[in-house]
Image 1 (cartoon, rainbow, N blue to C red):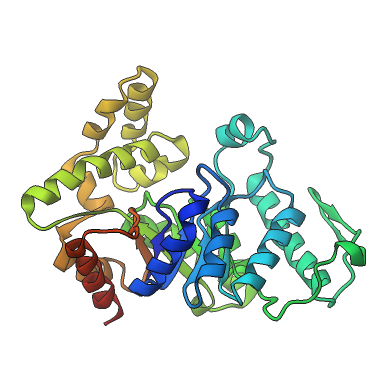
Image 2 (tube, rainbow, N blue to C red):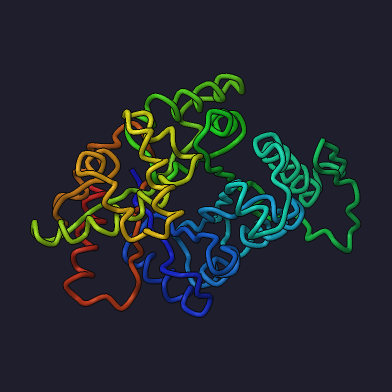
Length: 341
C-alpha cells in the first residue's frame, strides 16, 4: 500500500517547498484539492520542484471546465512532471455546481463518462494518432489546427482517477479509469458491499482485472502520543464526518450501518445554525467505524490491517507541511518507513 500526502493549502507560493519536502520525506504521491484555487496551479509549481513523487488532483471539479481546457492543462502537467501526473476528477454535488460555479448539473454520470472519452480523443489528436472528431450528447470537438495543438509528448498516457459514491461512478471507474478516489466518508463495509462490487462490474464489462485500477482513500485518523492526545484529536474528525454526513448524497454510508436518520439530524442542526453541535451527533461507535484511533507508532499497522486488499493508496486527512518541529518530522519519517516496510 502506497502512502501519499496532501498539499497543506491552495497556496501557489509555497507549493514548491511543500512538494520537495513531501518527496524528500518519502511519500509516494502528493494530491492537491479544488479549494481556494484550482489544483492545477500549485501542481505546476510542484512538478518543476520535484523529480520522483507522483502529483495528482484530488479532485478537480469536472463540469466547470471544458474537456478541452482540462485536457490541455493535464497534457502540460504530464510533460512538466515527466509522466508523474494523475488527473483526478469529481462531479461535486448539485448545489456547488449550480451556485458556486454557475454551471448546469445535468446527468452527471453520463456526462463525466463522455468527458473522459472526449479528453482521450483530444490527447490522441495532440499525439498525432487521430484526427479530432468527437461528437457526443454533451460535447463536440472537431476543430484542432496546428497552431492550437501542443504537439506530441514523451508521456502521452495520463491516468484518470474519478471520485464517487454511487454505483454508476464505481462502474464507470472500473470500465474506463486507472483509479478511483474513495470518498473520505466511508467504511470498510461500504467499500466491500457497494464500492468494490460496482468497480468489479465495470472491470468485467471492459474485460479488465482488479490490478488495472488503483483505489486511493483518504483515511480519518485520530492520532496521538497517548490517550489524552488521541481523545483531543477526535473532535475535529467528528466535525468532518458530520459535515460530510449532512449531505443527502452520502446518506447511504450511514444507512449501511443502520444510522440513516443521522443525516436528517445533521441537516436540522445546520439549518438551525447549530453547527458547533454537529460533531456530538457522531457517536463513539460511529467514530470507530469511520475512523482509526491509535498512537503514532500504531498507525501504519492499523491502516494496513483495516484496508488490506481493499485499497492501493492511502493518505491521512491532514497535511504534512515543511517546517515541522524536529520531533514531529521524525515521527512522520517513522510512519512513512513503516508503510514501506
